[in-house]
Image (tube, rainbow, N blue to C red; front, side):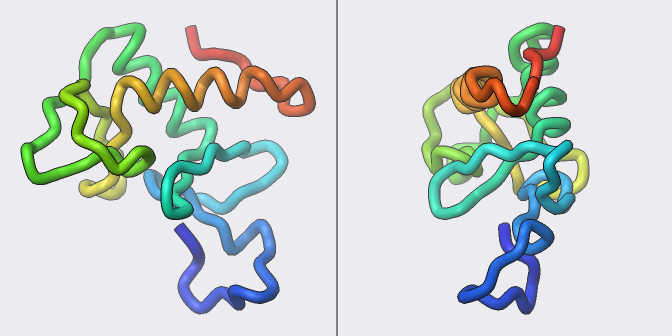
Length: 113
């Protein structure tokens, strides 16, 4: 998500917002990009991973809805943002995003346990 009124030709880190909590990108808040510029920040990703992979829990996605990151309805359970009711991440995208952040040694991001 982009901050409302952001200059598309001169974007700054503060212009990139997590679709799940609305926080802006910072060095200490890494983000993973999904389709069409959707973003999930590390803290939201950690919450989704804990619920979908460690609990396991999650909700069933309504038939007409799609995962915010992959834009598909694959039958996986989803984690729903506690802030933005329409933002959901499927179990597959949650794990894929965790792996992406883990693989970047500069981030030092660790898989939730």
